[in-house]
Amino acid sequence: MTTLTNANLVLPDGVHDGSLRIEDGRIAAVSPASPPPGDDIVDLGGRHVVPGFVDIHVHGGAGASYQAGRDDEVRKGVAFHRAAGTTTTMASLVTGDRRDLADAVSRLADLAADGLIAGIHLEGPYLSPARCGAHDPDLLRPPDRDEFRRLVALGRGHVRMITLAPELPGALDLVRDAVDAGVIAAVGHTEAPGETARAAFEAGARVATHLFNAMRPLHHREGGPIAAALGDPRVTVELINDGVHVEPAVARLAFAAAGTARVALITDAMAAAGMGDGDYRLGVMDVEVRAGRATLAGGGSIAGSTITMADGFRRAVTHVGLPIEKAAEAASLTPARALGIDSRTGSLEPGKDADLLVLGPDLTVERVMKNGHWL
Ligand SMILES: [Zn+2]
Image (tube, rainbow, N blue to C red; front, side, top):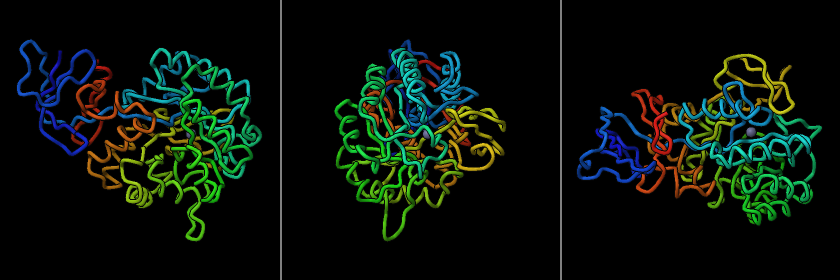
């Protein structure tokens, strides 16, 4: 049993001086009257403690691709992000051919069963060629319900999300199939007008994939998927808060429109995260990273990010201007709720997993605890 004392606890309703008691990998109590005798006492010297981050959209890190890497490489990528505070992670797959996706899904399902990742996110292959971003346009295809069913079966319950463009033929049927299979449908990489995006949300889609990026932009006479997502209280919008994909003023607009309960910070990080400038792969596409900015080789679309959740969280405070408890909500509780795992993680509340971070004075991540164990 461990009690963390002299902490600044970042709780859903604000920051409070207090202590946390950890028992059997879970949070046993928040600010108990006094730690029971026999506990290990860790004095945090007034540091902030926030819930561990939940990244629902990430492709890799530390040189490793979750799509192409061997198991040990995937573990290395997950460990890199975990050290930066991501205690719960999805593994996102970009568009690939049938065989590539099937192989990646079966391999990652084993790692999800081991608890390394929280699930698999299929980002494609049913995306709009007009908004393909860093996805190989030659591999995009119309929604294929049989292929999707096979991927879900190969995933053995671990395919948890699919991003698709709702304007494609059969897309709304696929949204309904996803809902029936317990897979979160996400609207993204789309040229859809608002009406079509709203139809997808009516059909059960509940997430907008990296809002603003790779979708029809907001126009005042045709709000498109952005206005549709921000205007629907059932929908969580993902935001890549790296200052490259979305500038702070626009991030502020998203938070003002949807609140931190509906904006989930994501990294959309690729293998280059944590690696510095160089040449990398995202799926089958060549990507170059210069000054931390990832683009398709030869100039072109921005291609994923190189940030960690810690970077996005810190920028939400320093550049967007959110109070720390609101930034923590967007980085942890909101994505956990979108995934349906908020009874286990996402906030510092009794009964939840002891997934938490100790922050330094400049909001850097100093220590990471996952399931009650320090990394
Ligand atoms: Zn992505």
